[in-house]
Image (cartoon, rainbow, N blue to C red; front, side):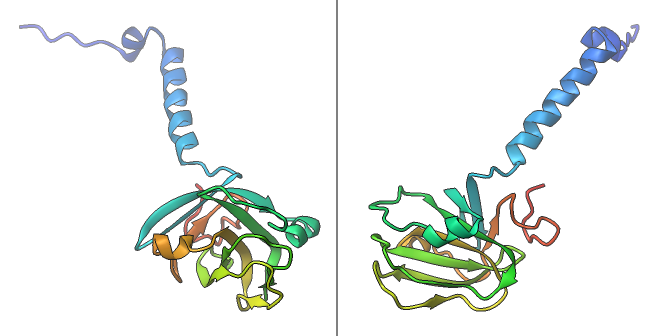
Length: 168
């Protein structure tokens, strides 16, 4: 019995074809794991969820937020991003739908959740100090998911070097 071996070049046709195949596999795997700007992922002991988000990272976008919206699609929300961690406070003026307001630290960890904020309320909703991002989702959704303090959010615009759950 003779054992015959083949070189990679004869199996794949040429070494350059092997390089293309390896690059294609790397691209598929890396794209599947990459974060998308329009998606916020959140996880915890309860499981995980993905939300289609609008990003509010300018003063004007943060000021307007979800005001005047008559509905918010399920699994959707708005992610407010700030330049540096600090105190964060919201109100529901001109907001027509109940919202869960999730306050996040620099690492993406949930620090405080205000459930079912009342539409139109002028009462301040504060999330404490050290807040870098706030996720607003449909009222009651956080409880429905079991989302709690310490849950982790990832998004490409969060500082990846400090993230508990980075995008890479």
